[in-house]
Amino acid sequence: MGREIIPVEEEVVTKPFSSSPFSDNINIGARDHLPFLSLNHVSFVCKSIKKSVQFYQQVLGFVLIKRPSSFDFEGAWLFNHGIGIHLLGSENLTKKKGKINPKDNHISFQCSDMDLIIHQLEEMNIEYVKAVVTEGGIIVDQIFFHDPDGYMIEICNCQNLPILPLSSCPIRKMPNPNINLGMSSSFYGKMQNCSGEVENLMMENLAMDLMNCSM
Image 1 (tube, helix red, strand yellow):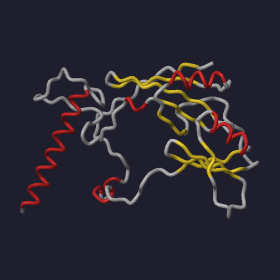
Image 2 (image 1 turned 180 degrees about the vertical axis):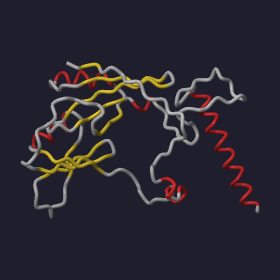
Image 3 (image 1 turned 120 degrees about the vertical axis):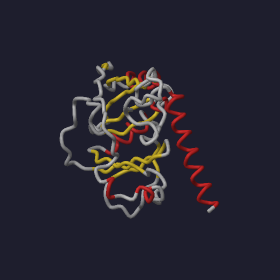
Protein backbone atom coordinates (compact mmCIF):
# COMPACT_ATOMS: atom_id res chain seq x y z
CA MET A 1 0.00 0.00 0.00
CA GLY A 2 2.93 2.29 0.62
CA ARG A 3 4.66 4.04 -2.26
CA GLU A 4 8.36 4.77 -2.59
CA ILE A 5 9.53 8.30 -3.26
CA ILE A 6 12.50 8.84 -5.54
CA PRO A 7 14.99 11.01 -3.61
CA VAL A 8 15.65 14.42 -5.12
CA GLU A 9 19.26 15.55 -5.17
CA GLU A 10 19.78 18.67 -3.10
CA GLU A 11 21.48 21.72 -4.59
CA VAL A 12 25.04 22.15 -3.41
CA VAL A 13 25.45 25.36 -1.47
CA THR A 14 28.83 27.03 -1.83
CA LYS A 15 28.11 30.47 -0.38
CA PRO A 16 27.97 31.25 3.34
CA PHE A 17 24.65 30.24 4.87
CA SER A 18 22.45 32.74 6.70
CA SER A 19 19.81 31.22 8.96
CA SER A 20 17.53 34.24 8.51
CA PRO A 21 17.14 37.03 5.95
CA PHE A 22 17.03 39.41 8.92
CA SER A 23 20.10 38.02 10.68
CA ASP A 24 22.11 41.20 10.11
CA ASN A 25 19.59 43.14 12.21
CA ILE A 26 19.30 40.68 15.08
CA ASN A 27 21.44 40.50 18.19
CA ILE A 28 22.51 36.86 18.00
CA GLY A 29 23.52 36.73 21.65
CA ALA A 30 20.10 37.93 22.76
CA ARG A 31 18.39 34.98 21.07
CA ASP A 32 20.14 32.56 23.43
CA HIS A 33 18.23 34.05 26.36
CA LEU A 34 14.66 34.04 25.03
CA PRO A 35 12.27 32.81 27.75
CA PHE A 36 10.70 30.01 25.70
CA LEU A 37 10.37 26.61 27.40
CA SER A 38 9.17 24.18 24.73
CA LEU A 39 6.72 23.61 21.90
CA ASN A 40 3.34 23.35 23.64
CA HIS A 41 0.89 22.20 20.97
CA VAL A 42 -0.19 22.25 17.35
CA SER A 43 -3.76 23.10 16.42
CA PHE A 44 -5.89 21.71 13.58
CA VAL A 45 -9.33 22.69 12.33
CA CYS A 46 -11.26 19.51 11.58
CA LYS A 47 -14.65 18.58 10.16
CA SER A 48 -15.37 15.76 12.61
CA ILE A 49 -13.96 16.01 16.12
CA LYS A 50 -14.94 12.40 16.79
CA LYS A 51 -13.11 10.99 13.74
CA SER A 52 -10.01 13.08 14.37
CA VAL A 53 -9.86 12.11 18.04
CA GLN A 54 -10.12 8.43 17.10
CA PHE A 55 -7.35 8.86 14.53
CA TYR A 56 -4.88 10.53 16.88
CA GLN A 57 -5.67 8.05 19.64
CA GLN A 58 -5.46 4.87 17.57
CA VAL A 59 -2.73 5.80 15.08
CA LEU A 60 -0.45 8.05 17.13
CA GLY A 61 -1.26 7.04 20.71
CA PHE A 62 -2.55 10.39 21.96
CA VAL A 63 -4.93 10.59 24.92
CA LEU A 64 -7.76 13.03 25.58
CA ILE A 65 -7.12 15.65 28.24
CA LYS A 66 -9.37 18.27 29.84
CA ARG A 67 -9.82 21.53 27.95
CA PRO A 68 -10.98 24.80 29.54
CA SER A 69 -14.69 24.69 30.39
CA SER A 70 -15.02 28.34 29.38
CA PHE A 71 -14.67 27.39 25.70
CA ASP A 72 -18.02 27.77 23.94
CA PHE A 73 -16.97 26.07 20.70
CA GLU A 74 -16.55 22.43 19.72
CA GLY A 75 -13.11 20.94 20.07
CA ALA A 76 -10.82 18.52 21.88
CA TRP A 77 -7.37 18.50 23.45
CA LEU A 78 -5.04 15.53 23.24
CA PHE A 79 -1.57 14.97 24.62
CA ASN A 80 1.34 12.52 24.36
CA HIS A 81 5.01 12.38 23.33
CA GLY A 82 5.60 15.69 25.09
CA ILE A 83 3.30 17.69 22.82
CA GLY A 84 -0.38 18.62 22.67
CA ILE A 85 -2.76 18.51 19.72
CA HIS A 86 -5.73 20.88 19.85
CA LEU A 87 -8.66 20.13 17.55
CA LEU A 88 -11.20 22.78 16.54
CA GLY A 89 -14.48 21.74 14.93
CA SER A 90 -15.70 23.46 11.76
CA GLU A 91 -18.00 22.53 8.89
CA ASN A 92 -16.40 25.08 6.57
CA LEU A 93 -13.31 23.20 5.51
CA THR A 94 -11.77 23.06 2.07
CA LYS A 95 -11.70 19.70 0.36
CA LYS A 96 -9.09 17.42 1.94
CA LYS A 97 -5.90 16.81 0.01
CA GLY A 98 -5.76 13.54 -1.89
CA LYS A 99 -2.11 13.38 -2.94
CA ILE A 100 0.51 12.82 -0.28
CA ASN A 101 3.29 15.33 -0.87
CA PRO A 102 6.25 15.09 1.56
CA LYS A 103 7.21 18.67 0.69
CA ASP A 104 3.91 19.99 2.02
CA ASN A 105 3.29 21.32 5.54
CA HIS A 106 3.40 18.55 8.14
CA ILE A 107 4.19 17.57 11.70
CA SER A 108 6.77 14.87 12.35
CA PHE A 109 7.22 12.25 15.07
CA GLN A 110 10.41 10.30 15.76
CA CYS A 111 9.98 6.56 16.01
CA SER A 112 12.17 3.64 17.09
CA ASP A 113 10.30 0.95 15.10
CA MET A 114 9.32 2.01 11.59
CA ASP A 115 8.20 -1.49 10.56
CA LEU A 116 5.66 -1.57 13.37
CA ILE A 117 4.15 1.73 12.21
CA ILE A 118 3.95 0.50 8.62
CA HIS A 119 2.22 -2.68 9.76
CA GLN A 120 -0.25 -0.64 11.81
CA LEU A 121 -1.03 1.72 8.91
CA GLU A 122 -1.64 -1.20 6.56
CA GLU A 123 -3.94 -2.91 9.07
CA MET A 124 -5.97 0.30 9.31
CA ASN A 125 -5.97 0.78 5.50
CA ILE A 126 -4.27 4.16 5.78
CA GLU A 127 -2.46 5.16 2.61
CA TYR A 128 1.16 6.22 3.04
CA VAL A 129 4.32 6.90 1.08
CA LYS A 130 7.90 6.13 2.07
CA ALA A 131 11.11 8.05 1.54
CA VAL A 132 14.75 7.62 2.51
CA VAL A 133 17.30 10.32 3.32
CA THR A 134 21.01 9.50 3.32
CA GLU A 135 23.68 11.79 4.74
CA GLY A 136 27.28 10.94 5.51
CA GLY A 137 26.53 7.21 5.67
CA ILE A 138 23.51 7.78 7.93
CA ILE A 139 20.12 6.53 6.74
CA VAL A 140 16.84 8.11 7.82
CA ASP A 141 13.54 6.41 6.95
CA GLN A 142 10.39 8.47 6.51
CA ILE A 143 6.68 7.64 6.27
CA PHE A 144 4.07 10.21 5.25
CA PHE A 145 0.28 9.96 5.52
CA HIS A 146 -2.80 12.12 6.07
CA ASP A 147 -5.15 12.49 9.00
CA PRO A 148 -8.94 12.49 8.32
CA ASP A 149 -8.86 16.15 7.23
CA GLY A 150 -5.83 15.88 4.97
CA TYR A 151 -3.21 17.25 7.36
CA MET A 152 0.05 15.46 6.69
CA ILE A 153 1.97 13.53 9.31
CA GLU A 154 5.51 12.19 9.08
CA ILE A 155 6.96 9.31 11.06
CA CYS A 156 10.75 9.03 10.92
CA ASN A 157 13.83 7.78 12.71
CA CYS A 158 15.45 11.22 12.52
CA GLN A 159 17.13 10.53 15.84
CA ASN A 160 19.76 8.76 13.71
CA LEU A 161 20.82 12.15 12.36
CA PRO A 162 22.91 14.28 14.75
CA ILE A 163 21.89 17.88 15.39
CA LEU A 164 24.85 20.14 14.71
CA PRO A 165 24.97 23.94 14.42
CA LEU A 166 25.74 25.29 10.95
CA SER A 167 28.37 27.59 12.47
CA SER A 168 30.45 24.60 13.53
CA CYS A 169 29.83 22.37 10.52
CA PRO A 170 28.97 24.36 7.37
CA ILE A 171 27.04 22.88 4.48
CA ARG A 172 30.00 22.93 2.13
CA LYS A 173 33.58 23.89 2.94
CA MET A 174 35.93 25.36 0.38
CA PRO A 175 39.12 23.35 -0.07
CA ASN A 176 41.74 24.06 2.60
CA PRO A 177 45.36 23.10 1.85
CA ASN A 178 45.86 22.22 5.52
CA ILE A 179 42.99 19.75 5.56
CA ASN A 180 43.01 16.24 4.17
CA LEU A 181 41.04 16.51 0.92
CA GLY A 182 40.00 12.90 1.33
CA MET A 183 37.54 13.96 4.00
CA SER A 184 33.85 13.78 3.16
CA SER A 185 32.30 17.01 1.80
CA SER A 186 28.92 16.01 3.19
CA PHE A 187 27.06 18.40 5.49
CA TYR A 188 27.89 16.17 8.40
CA GLY A 189 30.92 14.60 6.75
CA LYS A 190 32.54 11.89 8.75
CA MET A 191 31.24 12.13 12.27
CA GLN A 192 34.63 12.35 13.87
CA ASN A 193 35.71 15.23 11.61
CA CYS A 194 32.70 17.40 12.36
CA SER A 195 32.74 16.45 16.02
CA GLY A 196 36.35 17.56 16.15
CA GLU A 197 35.41 20.95 14.73
CA VAL A 198 32.69 21.36 17.35
CA GLU A 199 35.09 20.33 20.12
CA ASN A 200 37.74 22.81 18.96
CA LEU A 201 35.18 25.60 18.83
CA MET A 202 33.97 24.78 22.34
CA MET A 203 37.55 24.79 23.65
CA GLU A 204 38.23 28.15 22.01
CA ASN A 205 35.10 29.62 23.62
CA LEU A 206 36.08 28.16 26.98
CA ALA A 207 39.55 29.67 26.73
CA MET A 208 38.06 33.08 25.92
CA ASP A 209 35.69 32.81 28.88
CA LEU A 210 38.57 31.99 31.20
CA MET A 211 40.56 34.94 29.90
CA ASN A 212 37.59 37.26 30.44
CA CYS A 213 37.15 35.99 34.00
CA SER A 214 40.80 36.56 34.85
CA MET A 215 40.79 40.17 33.64
